[in-house]
Amino acid sequence: MLNLLSTSTVPQTKCSSVRLSDSEQPKVLVVDDHPSSRMTAVALLSVEGYEVLEAESGPAALECVVEANPDLILLDVMMPGMDGYEVCRRLKQDEQTRLIPVVFITALNDRRSRIMGIEAGGDDFLTKPFDRLELSARVKSLVGQKRLNEDLDHAEQVLFSMARSVESRDPDTGDHCERLLALGKSFGEFIQLSRHEIRDLIWGAYLHDIGKIGIPDAVLLKAGKLTPEEWEIMKQHVLIGEKICQPMRTLAGVIPIIRHHHERWDGSGYPDNLVGDEIPYLAQVFQCIDIYDALTSERPYKKAFTSAEALQIMAEETGKGWRNPQLFQQFSEFISSKQEKEPSCRCAPIQNS
Ligand SMILES: [Fe+2]
Image 1: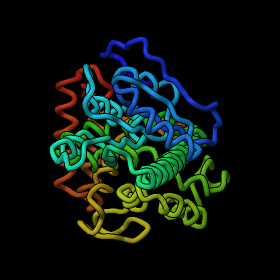
Image 2: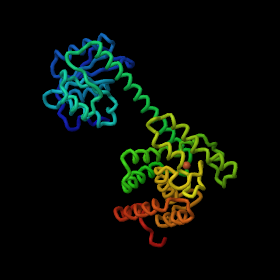
Image 3: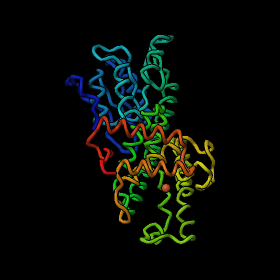
Image 4: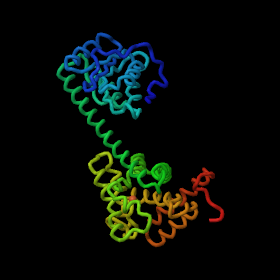
């Protein structure tokens, strides 16, 4: 649900439309407190075949966005009450509306307004009085771009749904992804990863095993030990996952996690037998939380180890050369600090471990 209106008082202004709705017909919202200015834009855009909506103030515009989900907003800068910059900031901060292109309407050569518009997240500018051809070209281009972005977002959503279905196919893992997500976010912050790196880690939590969708049930769900041949099939999941996510530009930072989350520090992992820092750092970080969660969760073939037991096992594996010793040290410190802050969490130390 959109929360754009939470701090604003919405006046009675209606979200008026000059054409009947058609789901394929792009919608443009024109926001201006001067009716004459709106009329010009409405007239030009209606001729071009757009459904045109009008709002006479910032709060009315936000209300209209919630109601009508326009494909583009032409936004006047100077309006009484909430100005255009504030409207734009609110739209761009909201996950539901950030993809709607905002075109600021400014006076010719108003450099300061343009800079403020860029800072508020505006996508383009048009000057008054409108040039019909320029208006038409800008609107057409931005509406096309917005629809493409929506498709990309939808494609991402499909991938995340696929990942969830993989997780539910393997009943042993329970809420593995959700736990990894929380652990990845807090460990990422602990070691001061950037916002983008933490986002990649969180997406990695969902997508790292998406390639298991290509592994037959007979192998994925086999109760006993895998034969060498079956193990070779299982190892393919990292390559299948990479192939599925590769076309998505927005997933570029997640691909190394998907491909390399089973590498080992001494080169004995798969698929590329990478050694030490050849293993992408985020894949190393992800591996820590993935293994820790697997160890501290109950599975049909094993009990849930306590936090201390899990760290002990990971320390032994690090001693064998499987993990980055420095990163493991940071991970141990992270778990300890978590225990101090949340003594009741499931990572709390168990006395008799
Ligand atoms: Fe995996």
